[in-house]
Image (cartoon, rainbow, N blue to C red; front, side, top):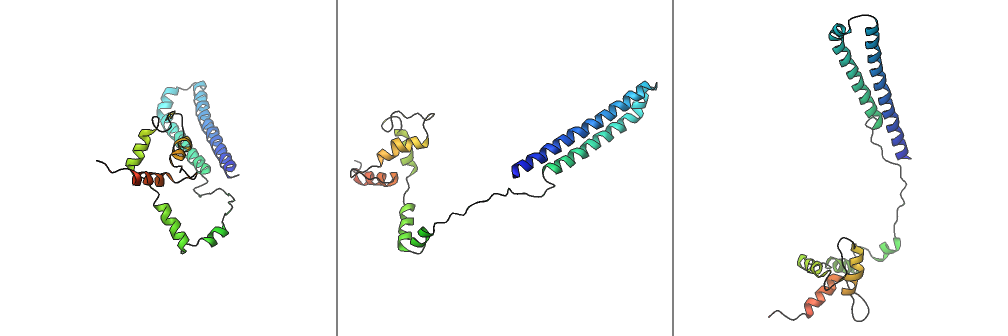
Length: 180
């Protein structure tokens, strides 16, 4: 509803501007034609009065355009769309995990420690298309494809479950033999 009202205002303002600018130009044209058909020397009259008339017409057009812009933007009154938003709140989770509970703190710490280094990220990217996801094409595949065909298989565990990719990387680093 808000967008429709805004578009209506813009249409009215643009039409108003075009209409009155056209009228000003037509009046100017008709005035010159009447002067020419009246047998007067239009060139001398135009030199004497034409510049003032042209400036007046331009000033009137500018005022009309300014008023139309004010109509378009709603006379500088900020307007927000009236959108009804539903507030979603899961009371069961907020009761089960309060921010001061040990379970909450443990989960926050676990999630905070799930990270990989830039070096690991670059190594992973370097493996795409070769060792990992051999059919990878950066122009065709999405992030979702990479997660499904590369991250998930790399983070599977032998027991059938899975880890985050960061946890799987840490496990590989812990089991990797030390460099010579």
